[in-house]
Length: 210
Ligand code: AMP
Figure 1 (cartoon, rainbow, N blue to C red):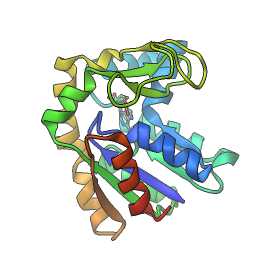
Figure 2 (figure 1 turned 180 degrees about the vertical axis):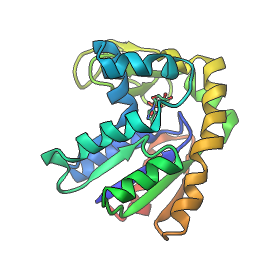
Figure 3 (figure 1 turned 90 degrees about the vertical axis):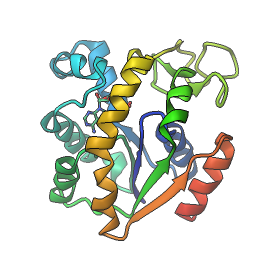
Figure 4 (figure 1 turned 135 degrees about the horizontal axis):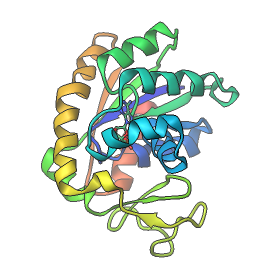
């Protein structure tokens, strides 16, 4: 299955991607995680991306398309993958089409802006492997420690309330038009994010028929 997850920052794409990845044994590819890793490692790309990410802006299409092209050519993507956070603009979607990638389903997780702002303050991410947690909705077994790799759980800089508002604006202006783009292809499915994580997951799995 080749799947795109759409949704506002904080809608739960990363969490649902991890659960789908476990169920289907296909890789979950998060451009956000890859960019954060590059920033942490101080690579050339990381240096270019840092100020955009911290300001809640999008990294340039050229950079992100390059990352995705390379990642999708790896062997573990042969049987499918989940794209979490890509594409985020129409030119990125067009670039994916131009690569000859045939997407099966585009799933949009719908969550109202007011809820997003509230949720983001409780979000935590593992600085080691990038796994996502939430202090209310998805707690780790041990506070502050990643279940998967034992890494430290931290707040993302760009989850600060003032940056979240900028990210939501960017989402509505640049990413939301992708719903229209994919609706035309008949591949778009909408799932409404619920209060309980497990309820959203049940709706996501049902929509995907898994
Ligand atoms: P995320 O973890 O998906 O919320 O991504 C965090 C940040 O990484 C975003 O706010 C952007 O600055 C950058 N980023 C991630 N994916 C993309 C993308 N497809 N296009 C442009 N910037 C991206």
